[in-house]
Length: 97
Image (tube, rainbow, N blue to C red):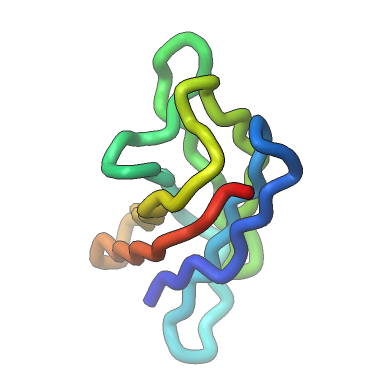
């Protein structure tokens, strides 16, 4: 299971994206998570997908929102990818304030 459990607006420009991956009581230290905002995969300034590495069942990353994102509601999706696991997806509606 993947669960987006934290979305905090530092400012209108920078956010912290966090998700927790669980498989019973297993400790997961493999795989990566890609985040999507309104269906668009989060990428760096060069257009490369940004992946957060899973450490102790969690991922966390800061992301500078493009200027086109204003205060408002967005669909945030986390996609977990790792060998030996099915792809896991979770989507939440979040507010940037």
